[in-house]
Image (cartoon, rainbow, N blue to C red; front, top):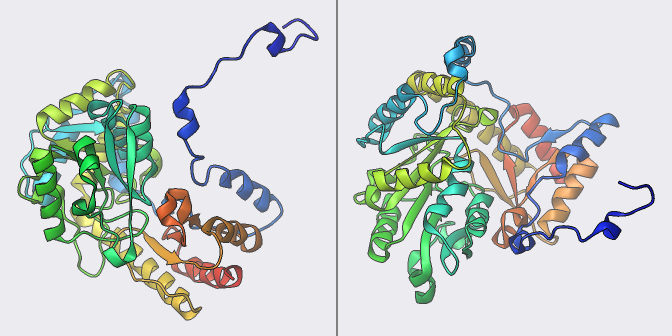
Length: 398
């Protein structure tokens, strides 16, 4: 650039697309830098913000990844087919866990973490003028994927008095007529609510009646406590006709950074998602798919111990919070405690907890207006650290 000449003098700057105006700041986006600054000052940080546990992945997955990394064939493009043996292990798991028979080549699709697949599925079904039904508070890719696809997200507030369930019968008729997708996530992030079987049966009937795709985000399918085992949507009669179910290795197997998961559903839906993905990625590293296969094949022996660790953490945190005077439910599933705060916005509470006490929590409002009045605490630290966090939060929450 010529010295002394500004970009504005050379011409106009490119304008952002209109959709960018509707994108909120991603929750916790500035927290990593704030944490770095606090740590540099010697502050002891307890991070309960992101659902990113400090627990180790299955040893079988680590060993499989190391072996695959030494095989040059594993470094080639995976494309959407991926590793056939991985698809077969998913089908075997789905049969073993949910008693559903799926064609591994036509009804299963490896994805780069469930977040990626969930964000892209809207491109298959949503266009200008279309609506999606999104829980509020809820996982951000539901609404963001809708926006990127040119549609509009219709949010439904999750209320404690409704057990944090989306009631399809309460939706306005004009919304139902325009709706293309209903997003559901049980066990739920962030509320940790669970969905009774009769509720899921009603949702499947609703989607069949109105021709709406049910995107069922089952990222916490294995994290159930006190003997509770979360169901899959294909256990419900008619579920396979109307739903795509998304699974993740992030939470169950402590493999958040590995970015691997899968989508399952009827062949036409899976083919549509694969077609979209073919233009935006060339598949996850085959070595990670091999590692994920090993994780699934060791799940029956490995997962119960991991869930027990989360349950111990839940018990420690809930007990400590109650001892310090907080009123909290003891969740039956997922890896979060959804704690009510009153008198101040949740963002104010979360900022003060971080800046004054070194505790990272997620303000409920960061996940939607319906989350105001709550903060989310993730079970991502050992029991003693969670107890310490509860004591610090008692000082921070006024």
